[in-house]
Image (tube, rainbow, N blue to C red; front, side):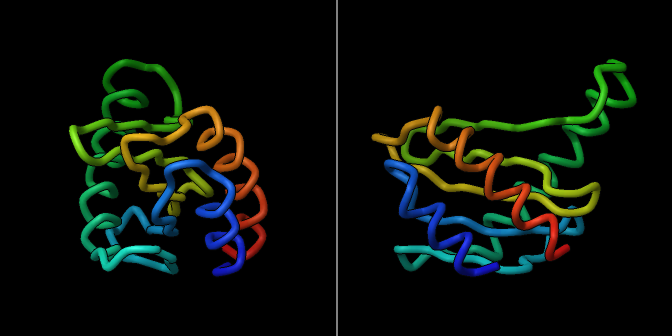
Length: 116
């Protein structure tokens, strides 16, 4: 799994970390080019994914969450579900390319599904 995550960070302009997380908030595997706490990133975004899934699927009747993108002043994160219980997280900086994140993220999620 690590080679796929490493390649994803290499392929996406502005990406500095990629991780596989569980909706339980636990880090499965991760790669970062900075000294960041991937456990914290995964745990926080797992909570956001659970909330989005509840809001879209249960409350709004919008179906399953297919992707989630959050942009802050210094951090952006693209999240793509891999299976019902696991997701791919891609951390991006201010010069990131969301189109690349979506394209390469979907491809990586398909490849990683075989491991999960």
